[in-house]
Length: 366
Image (tube, rainbow, N blue to C red; front, side, top):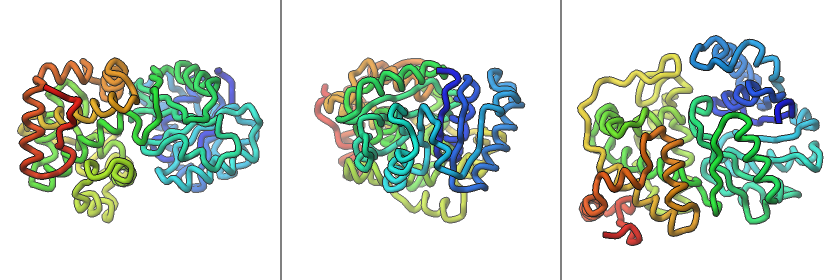
């Protein structure tokens, strides 16, 4: 694996860090973006991270493995193509369609999509069988999770190569049984985001929500997680999930729209719901709100994933543990809170709000 060439499209924060991750494990990386400004920002971040003592495997020599380019034809020698571009279906389709013109027939394609199915993205490719999802958890230099799934036409050998590549860069790949928008982690996270946005719109403070969530033993609260991902990205993904799953992903949009309008996008802009410095959110001390409500909406979505055949309980637990750095699995958390209690909370919230994110999914039963 090491020594192969990775053509990585998208020099946003996620793509920038994933490029460095590949380079630190001996891959030659060609980081592509249509924006010279984005590439220059990526160079500066790479230099900064080589001096960060948190990442001992990254050193100044790592950057020698990275080439920065605005020319898509530089993909011609790639063994592996990975995209981390903006979450826009047209752009992703066009990107892979264009790259196919230059690469060899054995080149593997992987998408980091957060909210589209592999089959949707592959629809304009000549060789649909060589694309699969390789979804990193944020921040990718830290989190071990890698969700992997193919579309109906994906060749098994492509899945095997993506799993092997994930392991080679220090990740723990988890193979899903069925493609769906949002995969597992984002479907769980984004119902929590919907609930958080409803509560914030009703006057709850971000630090109070996050303080309660951190009492579950996870390093990030839900509001901090939105900032970490980027509020413009969060809005785009919520819109895509709502398109696929309907009103349970409906959300009060005014909060996000106003922050996006003024450029407060979260970590990547230095300010969102919180101020960010040196890759860390400055979170005021809060009065912890009971996290049971959040647990209820997340476990409710988890049962949907099981019933839909996306993944079994064991893998959903593993994804939750790896994706949010939880000390225990999601279904164990539900047992600790009491499933009857969680169902009662959902029923009460649905009766109060009529919002479908709180509608009890019956396979999650008493």
